[in-house]
Amino acid sequence: MMDSPTSAYYLKGLMEDDCWALFMQRAFGRGEEEKYPNLCLIGKKIAKKCGGVPLAAKSLGSVMRFKREERQWLFMQNSELWEVEGCKQRILPALMLSYLHLPSHLRQCFAFCSIFPKNYEFKKHKLVLLWMAEGLILEEGSKRPEDIGDEYFSDFLWMSFFQEVELRDGGSTVGYKMNDVIHDLARYVSGNESVMLEQGLPPSNPPQIRRSSIIYKYREVTIPEALFEAEHLRTVLLIGEYGLLKDSSKMLLSCIYLRVLDLNNCDVHFLPSSIGGLICLRYLDLSYTPISKLPATTRNLCSLQTLNLSGCHNLRVLPDFEVMTGLRHLNIAGCDSLWYIPPGIKMLLQLQTLPLYFVHKRVGDLGVLENLNL
Image 1 (spheres, rainbow, N blue to C red):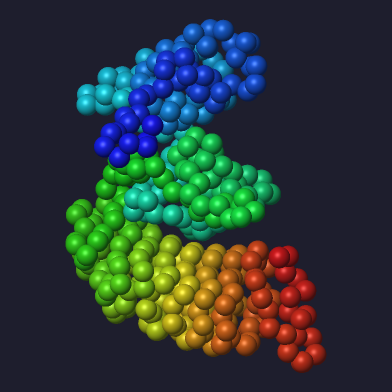
Image 2: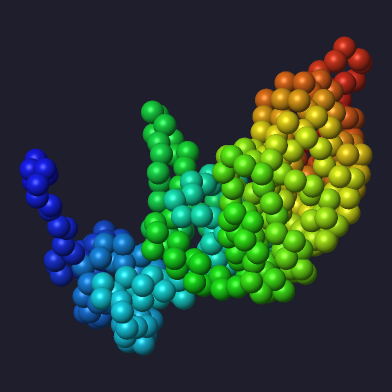
């Protein structure tokens, strides 16, 4: 059909029966639909409202997977959102309904993703750690928060809110992203709490901002001073391709309640000593920066859960870890100039990640690891 360079082939929506089949495949287990004839009648009407859009059918069907009460299905069928004007393909109301049927903790995790730019490829492990740092993962007995976050991620993948974008030869997924329509939904539901800033443009409504990403590309990175007025700012992500970060000391002095600071891949040669004042900081990413030494005050980051220093080839010294008793992930892979790990690492009883350790000839050097449960 695509052989002719002068003609276009216009894709149509799914036929009604096919849309129902896709919805049913997501909403029921194999053969389970036979047990719920009443739900199937309602489901066919819901699938018809999806307008033949596969993403809408998959998303709504996934949401109804574990709902077996007729009133729940009727609520979905009769929602006023289906009457939103200007949505000819019914995809926006369908996805909004999917979002509204999520439990509150998943809605918050999804809204967090609004600070990523469109077509941004993210890693599952990193996103889970960001959710942890923001306090978005609920405790479930003795389960690790990382495992609970993995389950959240799987829920979004199942509902087609996330999609795989790259596979290794062995079939192991390395990247994910959000469909443009899903991204628009995330931006909508996050409201004024999340902003993406580009080219130094100042944000609007700083008092309402809780999360911000700063997008740059091969140039000097400017953090708008208006952002420092965001008293409730919790997350700052710098996203780009190796930009030169100007003086960050003012940001660190102003945003004292930061929980996430991601400066990976920036041209950062040093951090001011004021970094030690961010006692709420849980996630610090300096990976692939030319930094050679962290200030001594870094040891005061008592709430830190993740310290990512991977690819910091110039890094020679690590801070003392005695106060960082909550640290769970210390990534020093690729720190070629590093040769010594402070003995305070023995205090990190919650440590989950330590890709390498430097062993010396001193007696008992490995003994500092005896109480760690990696």
